[in-house]
Amino acid sequence: MAQTDMGGSRPPILWDRIVRLSHWGIVIVILANEVFTKGGSPLHVWFGWGGLVLLVLRMAWGIIGNPEARFSAFPPNPAGALRHMKQLLKGNPPSYRSHNPAGAMMAYALWACIAFMVASGISMSGANPFAVAERQAIVDSGDWSQLAKTTEAGDDDEADGWIKDAHEIVANLILLLVALHIGGVIVESVVIRHNLVPAMLVGRRAAKADTKTKLQ
Picture 1 (cartoon, rainbow, N blue to C red):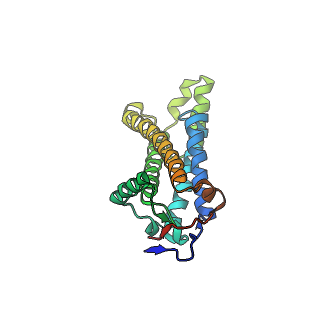
Picture 2 (cartoon, rainbow, N blue to C red):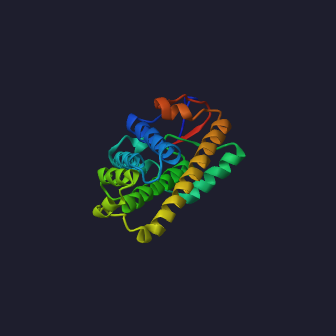
Picture 3 (cartoon, rainbow, N blue to C red):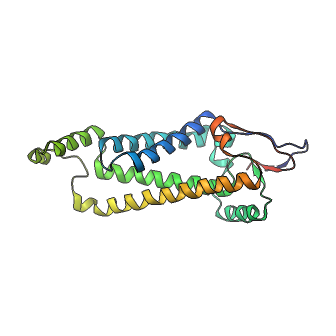
């Protein structure tokens, strides 16, 4: 439903604690697993499980959370995303209490990629992070005779080859999407003369006059 602010200022856009926790938690997981951990290491797997917990939390909150956080507030709309980007290029995009259509498509794309990363990671390493640590300890010790005793899923390198390739491709895709997301935030912040980052840090964005606000 579109709303025009008759009072001359836009209602503040709010991101609740669950949205902010899941957002920045997933940022940490992506950064840690792309930069600071080794693929297949126990720490890498633990961060992957952390990403799964955060993703499940966000999915649940998208159903039962605050109005701005619910999926119904920003349904996937490719045509709307393209329309929003055209409006952005013209310098007159409408404002949304939740994600704008382009931001919504980015969110769904990232969530889908993260879900695939978790599923493919579990397929390769097995569902038990402790078993991953055990196998890594055996490899580090050099006693390869003990490695055959571990029977967790993911030991068949040939079977996991295509999954590993897809895992790496999607990991790079996530980095590309993150770069596009950051670029989009910067461009929109400049065009609408509002820094969007504080809304995800403290949950509130200052009002701005003469802007249409939409709550889908």
